[in-house]
Length: 336
Image (cartoon, rainbow, N blue to C red; front, side, top):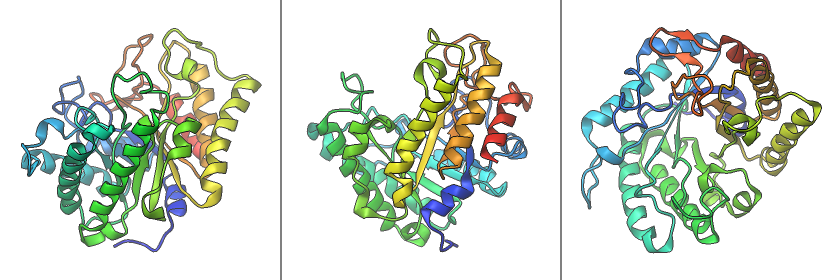
């Protein structure tokens, strides 16, 4: 059933999570080089101390034509199977609409068509999962944005933010109306591109001021260290620590302090042959976020090629061993 627990308390319970990236969010589960997900993989993640898994899902190529937009049964079954791997381990799971930005277009011109499809797709997902308890969370969308626009990663335009608010509202209303436990389900809603920039946070409207709605932010911070292959490879000065702390403080002061729960659904660093800096960063990030009641989820895309831009993998899914056990241990120390 659904416990009588606040969103703030639920997120405090979650603390530290792991993303099953580049998997169900790929065109097919193995299209981007990851093996088919197994229960053993998820058990390995649990064993290291993570207690939540975000399961990004792209529905795009599995949705039938208008007006029904019927989701392919085999795909929905497979998503449910993977969700059950997570829940059967006693962990929390988050499912979303991930790379569906080809049809979720936050402009006034596209709003109606996008919203109709969004509602139909969420009706089906919500119905399938309505009897699951509060260990399953829904996330309305992943990084919704106007792809290719100049403001795409800068918080979007006012128009983009306005339409995203209405998309979030339509999805939350659809989930709430779908029966079972969904009237109480915890639901994550993102800003434009899930950015933590002020301009996006200022315009975010919480659907119906719903107390069981959680703000979803992605923060690969600091960018030049975490994401930019040509950026800096050192992290750990007093200035570095203070900067990251003040970024998390800003989120805490705006939301958590005022009773609005926040999950950082993606963070992480790429490998620049700088393990000691990555370890220091992971521990500090986890400690500062979790101590402020913000849960964090490492972006693990399964990709391992040190020195290359996309090396976020922590777990070797083929051998069920850890590429960087030191980083995982640092995350666990930080998360307490």
